[in-house]
Every structure is written in structure tokens, then in C-alpha cells.
Image (cartoon, rainbow, N blue to C red; front, side, top):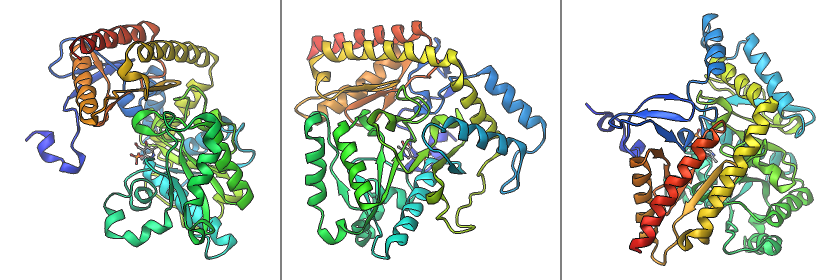
Length: 422
Ligand SMILES: Cc1ncc(COP(=O)(O)O)c(C=O)c1O
């Protein structure tokens, strides 16, 4: 029976292709003669590309010791990874604490728990978490309610009051100079009793579907509010962390100091690894035994995490990344300039971008975006089909310049064809 018939409908892939093997930025896809350039990183995960020799060596080394799982017992690799992570984040937190998990939603769910614990320190009434409309934080119940709510929003509608929202300041609606006013207007629109009981704010560092960034003034206004109210400021860095946006963590674009950051995806280069890092006084608000997860600090995941940090600390990585970011943005922005239907909403930050097909009729944008994905694959490039009017682009951070140029030449050809028929 085909995979698609066996998996729950809830997990249906929107692009039904079968991956066979991979090397660097290339993957083999069943039924395609040519190697495909993966411009998705498996949806922002495989940041070191495929078949990375250092990663394989480190994984094999750990596997050869025979312990694939240790739950809450200590291992050398766990200690070594936590120390690497501490060093990696030393410019952000002086004396951090960590909690490692295996999926992103566990990390954001833990963030929710820690924010609530810090609220309880103020008073029992401080029990609401402010989040941003359109942000995504995962599929478990708390994470979902901090995002669009999914089924929980309708069935347990009374819970929505615990997760007030402000609108997302899309760059085509809110200018940099208006970010603070926009935030304050949104905040003041929330009923006072709810507003006064906010104990923390969670922000997705950029909004996923369209790689949408915020005006800096908006994020600074949020930080100011958190400092004034003495409440927690947290970033969901699942996609944005580990140099995806060109900086080590995406929030660093906004010159703010979070209390907690949720991490995952690229941090494990394909192995299930996620977690939360924060100021120890907040991380330690969790009661003893309140945080646990069967695959926390899994030895193989820790070996992968160590490899990611080892690669990212090297000067070679940093200089390659700089050229990649320059080229990716230069070629991306050239497309935006050239094609009027992309101009208003498309965005590129570091090594992530989205081509947003903006037409009066949204349906047409979605159709064009889907067609673009199909045409790109026919020409040898896999891109992220979002199901919306956006096509998301997020290659391996180690991609070679020649591949970036090849991909953008292909994109330009496809868009030229679109232009002719519009
Ligand atoms: C910003 C963000 N937060 C949380 C999650 C949830 O992560 P996971 O799918 O690993 O549970 C994702 C996943 O796409 C994400 O992009």
C-alpha cells in the first residue's frame, strides 16, 4: 500500500515526491533523472545539506558506543552538547539554563508553561499570554492556541481569552516609523482586564508562510512593554535560529534581549532536537520534575547538535554564509524588482525568502505559486509549496554559489514565462 494511503489524512504531504538519497544540496527524487537542488532544506531542517561527512562521523562515533537512548541518565555526549550550546549562546545569556526536547511544539509548549509560572510569581491573575495573529508555534494544544488555535479555538472557545492576540504588522501595511503606534493601538484594543493579566509575550521571529519580518519599532515596543510590566519576552526561533536569517538567532536583527528562546529544526541538522534556552531565574521556575520528555538529550541528537555548532563556529562557515546571504538576497531582490506581481509582499532575510504572488484575486496568487513549484521541480529545483500565495525558499546554509545562481536563473525563466501569459 502506498505511503499516502497509510498515513493519516492530517499528515498529507502537499507535494507527493519520494526522496531517495542526498548529497550536499542535491537530492535524488524517484522518477526524476536529474539531481534536484533542494531549496527547502527539508523545510528548514537540513541546514548542513545531505551526507555531511563530519555529521556522519560524529553520529557513527556515538552509535558505536552502543547507547542510543539514555532518558534522564547522564551521558558524556549530553554534557558535551550542553556545554557547546552554552558557549554558542554566551553572547545572549550570561548564565542560561536549558531544556532539550525532540519537537518544536514541545519547546513552545514548555515556553508557555514557564511564562505561566513566571506569571504566578506576580499574582494568580497574571495568566494570559500575548501572541501575534498569524504566527505558528506548533500543533499541541497550548502551542496551537498561541497560534491560530486550530480545533481547540472552536471547541474550547473560552480558552481564547487566555491567549489574546495583536495583528501582525505586515510590511505592506505598517511602515517602520509606525511600528510602535501600531503595537500600542493593538494592545489597547484588548479589554483592560485581559491586558492587565498578560504574563508574557511569545513572538515567532519571522512569520513562516511569507518569511515576513517585523518593523524593528514594533518589536522594540513589545520589549518596552515587557520591561515595564516585568513580564517575559520570548521568541520562537524554530525556523529563524542557527543562522537561518544570516545572524546566529533571528531576534538579533531587532536589537532586543529576550528572556527565553525556543529552538529546533536546523539545530539538529535532521535529527530530532529542539529545546528552550533562557535566563536561569525563569528556566528554574519549573517545579522539580515538571519538565521531562522521553527523548530529551538523546545521544545521537546531541551528537548532531554538537556537529551543527562545530560547523557554525568555524570561520570558514561564517565567511561562506556571508557570501551566500549576499548572493541569495541579491538574486532574490532582483526578481522582486523585475516582476511586479512579486514586488509588494515578497521578502528575503538571510538564507530564507518567500516569493509572494500578489494578485487582486488571492485564488490566482495561490494558483500561480503552485504552478511555480511544479515548474521549478520540472526544471530541477525543489521549493516549499506553502498552499498559499507564497513559495518559500530555504536552501542548505552550505549551498554552493554555483547552485544558488543556477536556481535563480531557473526561477527567472519560469517567471518570464508567467509574465508572457499574464
Ligand atoms: C516557528 C515554528 N514554531 C514551532 C514549530 C513546531 O515545530 P515541530 O513541527 O517540530 O513541532 C514550527 C514548525 O514548523 C515552526 O515553524
